[in-house]
Image (cartoon, rainbow, N blue to C red):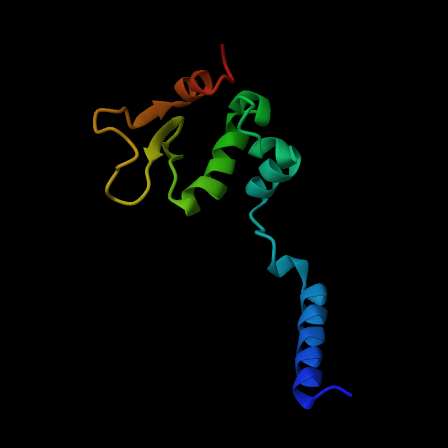
Length: 120
């Protein structure tokens, strides 16, 4: 027979597995619809860095939403709309080590569409 410690560990593992399988999905998924749509519609294609941005995402809005959801929390560059049709490059932390000091920081929607290949 097993020791009381083994039984206790087995019981704890079983309870943990059961609670993980029965946890409400609403608590696990970000309920912010634009982000879910961008990720869900593109699936693994969004993560394929061998493809150009304009082939991984249907449009600039999906790409910007994906950047805000995935790049921003990881302290990677992303674009924030600061006024209608004008976006500011947001960089990691306050040191701006990932962006040269002379790099342009604001872009129009048209400039970003051209930059990422959504407009010719």
